[in-house]
Length: 379
Image (cartoon, rainbow, N blue to C red):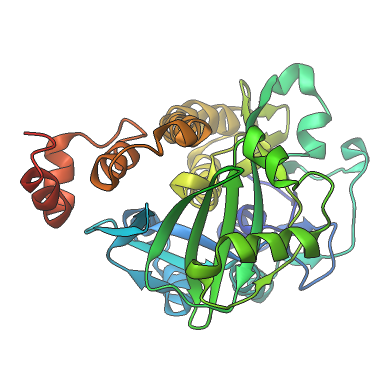
């Protein structure tokens, strides 16, 4: 095991808190700090979602944390797609969700119980001022750790063209649902799912043409929420949309060629992004933390351990990120597919990432495929 007297983790999101917890568990006598720029209890967004299979990584590698988190999760076994007013059930595509703030609170409590010092309201402007043996960059898309040496980390960044806004609502939806609508101004989509018994995430997305035509540009949070309530009035059934830093933005596509630089290492959105349409961002970040802890546990020195982390983790994360980018590209053009019949549209959606072939889809979703085949759409 690599001996580390001190570890500073920059960023108090799920990946940073989880990494700090794992590193402290392995080194109970080391000084481990999490430095978070926001106050305690502050977060953006609402719920985060995991596929049912995605939770298996946590159950296998860290059953104690799994046991703490999962009782607070909402779960369902099917998902729903709404197109042209018709609901299509895709069976066997299970998910679990939890409030982002609740997840952070649970991970904070667990980290502090193990002796991690979590410091809120602390912005790290200059990483060079830190003297810890290991510095973990878990500080997201605007990572100060990554920006401390962009020449070394070599980030590649671009933006998807679709616009989205992340709202919440007190209407609990039965399943994770994708609702696609076409208004006189263009196509819009909502990703919505419950993350508590009486609360749901509600993400609205549209392409640049629809964004401009609906007049979202320049709207404040309150006005854009009101307009989205009107567009999705039938879906919301009278429920209001709740805002929390719900500004419209485009999703960043970012990948670092290198995740390590001397004693600095990147995890989560600091190193890579995965579009929210595949529900893998938080999972990837936490899996990065597990991989980093494993490499530092088996390594003899910090240099070799970080190299091992990069060599073993990057290819695995890369496959999921590629699938997420492919999924995002489907959403970039979903407006052009709105003329498809509901089952055709649904099939096109569920196979969008390239990871779902017919044989796998028949195994996972026999009910959907029976309906699809009965319509004579595909042999």
